[in-house]
Length: 361
Ligand code: ASP
Image 1: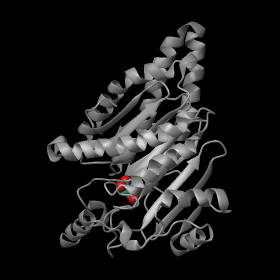
Image 2: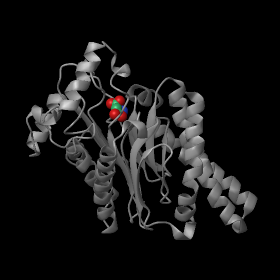
Image 3: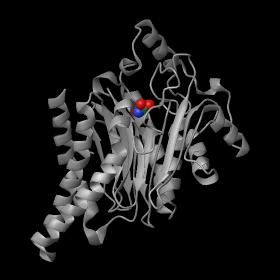
């Protein structure tokens, strides 16, 4: 497993280089960029029909296009992230909103968070059962409450005060998720062994043309979760984080491990501190004439930092992936699973979606 993880890390770093060369030359940075994910996990060609694969690509493209449109029209990173996530929440293929995985008791308990990188404002909700789009409620918490994180019935009464759209809990429930829960129960698996190891959580990160960043994540958590279990997605710093000084991150995977490593915050902090130290060293070493060398190497350094945090999480026993956006417009993915539903776009015309680890982004 570990060797395998390393090969993915190395492969993805190599494949991502041309995109960075395009994206990061200091005088030619993209005005905006966005990356999305629809979960990581055991996503393999041999298990996919052509039709199913095409459906996933189209679903990801629709979410990516919605976010890109906001950014291309000069909208904010936050609005772009929300636009992409709402589409995936409404799409039953993903484990967020309609089509979310079910708890041990057979209901959907939804978690979501949004964060903006300017003032590091955040809003999050956990365990909501009747809000159609939990990411919209997270934004309400951020913008219209004195708090950051609301749970369960309290979050729902706040939603009622804010006039949000409610649905019957049955709206979220789909046949494949009912069968997945039955499978987990029949085998008496623990939550972390549950399902077939596909984390369909959705998320987005973006940089807008004003230089602001945002990250958002939305999920039903893990199949068969019990006792009000909360994953990493709504925990600011674990599954979601944005800071204009360093990066925006959204995660998917075994939430318990992402919480223990505070993955999203750890990535941003290391990028901020180690990235600055690297820049300083390079500036002294190569001076102005070394710009090209500097650009290609800062990318390697940034990528290594992200992969290192993910490897630390994996070393504890976790698995999954992250999407990362940087203030210079670069975006990348790091994951240790056979695939991750993902996509990215920027103002230079980059526009791609991918499913499997061996695809070029
Ligand atoms: N990270 C999510 C959680 O642990 C699950 C997922 O990524 O699908 O709740």
